[in-house]
Figure (cartoon, rainbow, N blue to C red):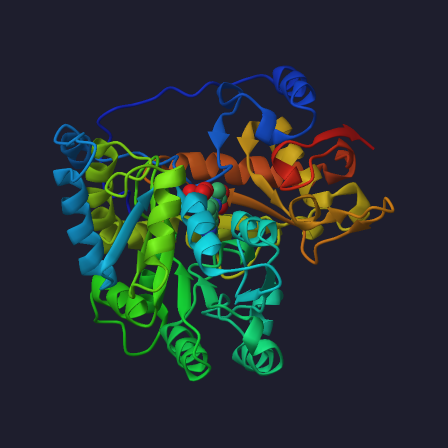
Length: 456
Ligand code: F0G
């Protein structure tokens, strides 16, 4: 058997990308106030800002879109998607939303109130923000292995069950439900094991609490279980996904990830308990419950996308892509969260910029440097994203300074990855010239998206 794992598709429609000069990139970054979120995408060569909504759809998805039923209420496309989702999740209630954070906002508004707290392995930033906006505390309880970037462990997204139990015992009456994020995006895209999901659900159940899963990347998580968890090696990925869902009482999904679409999301719930409130909020903010902020054609694309997202050939290639870049980085002496996750590689900026003070935001600085060096756009997952400026002007910092390179699905080929590996190694070779930043303007919430910086 040849050893090279090829992209399991061929390209039918292409989109040019534009090489810029270093001088052009310097100008573009300055105009973007040293914040790559503010760049024009046209000025980016390899856009690894996010894997969310950025992938390529298949010919089958484009074909299905022509069959979209755009009826306001009761569209055929809704029922088609509902049956796909009920089959995978085993849950009776399905509510489409325009993306993941809308699903979070609706479910949390229906199910939480101020003063409560929600445990999770790690809340994604919008999940945390939606809870905090309601006055709910978002508590991250990832297991200790997850906090050591260099440690190799098969399931670094697992939640620490002892700490969950302690929290249930000390603050049980304040907990409306437990959450778990698969894969753990804020912590390296690391998977959660089936054993951990099962035990967590049982622990919550013992205390009368439901389990809500954040399932943006459930297909990748299921494939990791197949590859790493004893007993699952011969089970189809879809059956593994069905088992994962069987332990949950509900889920929020951004379909822009493993749903293989450019827009979309949903809520699924097993019981009626929150459904009246969910339906009211859906109509208030998203639209009639059979379209929920989406066009009929979007529902069709998602119905096909969920099937394609569970394809094992695709998933094997997908996970291998991240692993491959990890091998290239390792050869260049660059640290990253190990093992590589499903959708992204998270560079440990500390291994490139060991001497830069955290107050100069080393991961942000590395992000800017990768753009200047080779037109690559990643995203900082560090103290700009998770730190806070306190009223007295001081700051809190994040324990890790990471740069996430997140890979759009079915979009970039192996030579794009080879190019990126060279750019990253080159950036490290002249790390002493990389400058940190200070933030000169920032909003109250989610400051990384829009803040303006200047060079230190
Ligand atoms: N939960 C997780 C784990 C996510 O990664 C995201 C989005 C969301 C919820 C929210 O979904 O964007 O559709 O509203 N993550 C993207 C990212 C933005 O780049 O990781 P959304």
